[in-house]
Length: 124
Image 1 (tube, rainbow, N blue to C red):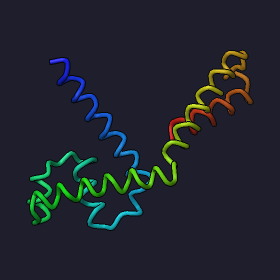
Image 2 (image 1 turned 180 degrees about the vertical axis):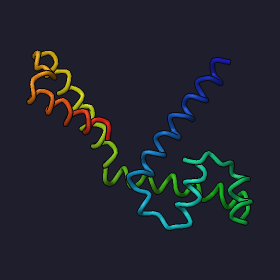
Image 3 (image 1 turned 90 degrees about the vertical axis):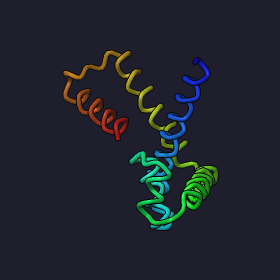
Image 4 (image 1 turned 30 degrees about the vertical axis):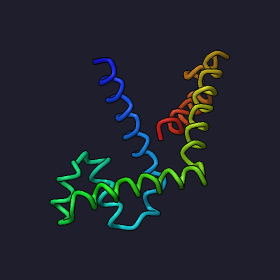
């Protein structure tokens, strides 16, 4: 049972990762590939459902998903936009914590503005 839970967790993490890669690099894909990948990753359609909807074989959908996944990972390897985004978000969180430790108050108008800017950057 433990192995299954880990497998499910790993698959979920992979889907989240692929979804984030798609957010960064999806515009670089061909329209048809975007539709397939959105249906599979973001809308959680099965390969069979996508094949039926697009009137293509299950194997064609499966191959497309694998190819698109490889493409997106290749873009990240070359450009590193997702890694840079995550690093900057982590740095903003650290900055937020440092400001709190310095007792910079959100009650102070400038402190409030600083925390608001940081929160917007972190959440975007």
